[in-house]
Image (cartoon, rainbow, N blue to C red; front, top):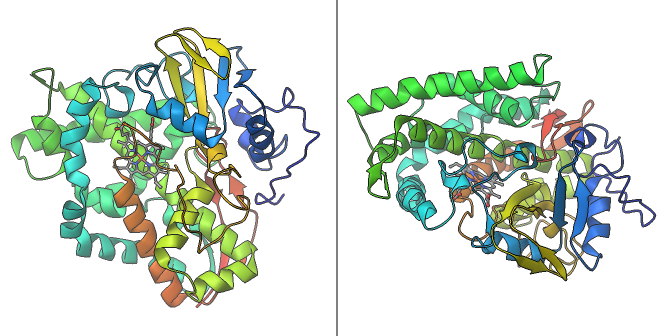
Length: 413
Ligand code: HEM
């Protein structure tokens, strides 16, 4: 099954489409591509009312302006209850972490931690990050058949490793545990049982982070964990548990998204030879290729919010407690904003995609992600002359992350 096919059928029955079911996002798309469903939803006059397999009502917004409206309005659409469909019954970390806190509390976590990822901070780490990316993708640049998904799995750690000060031998385990945390039923990460896989992922990540936090208390530095030790929310320092949970959010945010932009891009370049040739020959500015890869991949399909004050969305009155799903991946294919949205245009300008979200919670790691993806693309363009699909491409079983778990490629260099 070609994962690039979007099958934009108009006769699709939305009530039959399992848009809210993680299992429908496996390889192949069992019930048609979600893009087909999102396109139909965008044409509806009101938010789409659907139910998860366990009967929870979710209002979906899919058009670009509606997604932006929901994400910007943190007063009426809160994050504290949970922001992904998997935690539709409530996230235990709600109110404790940067991504699960509403303003004004959110600012107390956001302002100091974002300092670890400014242009200045990343420029200082530049040579280290470049060397890390080079080392990580070197095997992929050798002629032969490689699984690009494997080589990119820890790509985000090329920058986050130095930012958090985590030694390189831990990167593959952290990256794998992060993916197991978002897709515990995917065959690439599961040990057979969803509960046990999640438990393993949490034990691995939290166990490691607990030791690291204790070490930073003894010997602070200029890394993100040392910064978190100094953060005060409402006049009080963060507890060790809150520091752990926040580190976890940063590692999850970085590792479950960044690799999939690189894999989705290479998948496309290998599958569409004309495009592959154009991008590998360097006909377009690298920055526009990276932005289009971000729009195209949109690794976080959706962001969930809970209504906190009565609000009306296109005539539908929503009471506090209702759950709204803002489909970012759909907004990034909205023809009202993007010309020819189902075409990958490596020279697309302007490209106002919202792959990093929008508003108060806009991704704090965007610069770091753009940096490592750009470095990887530069190396690939320097060394690789051709790419060919060399086996089955496997998609992640998740309605949250648009990921690829296996991408066998024949590389010509
Ligand atoms: C291509 C890569 C990435 C994509 C597509 C992405 C996407 C997103 C999106 C859509 C949000 C908004 C969440 C919301 O509104 O609820 C977000 C927030 C966040 N991201 Fe990323 N992210 C990426 C890379 C990273 C990296 C490298 C880090 C590491 C620092 C990171 C850490 C975070 C954190 C901590 C938040 C929460 C920010 C807040 O609530 O203020 N992300 N990301």
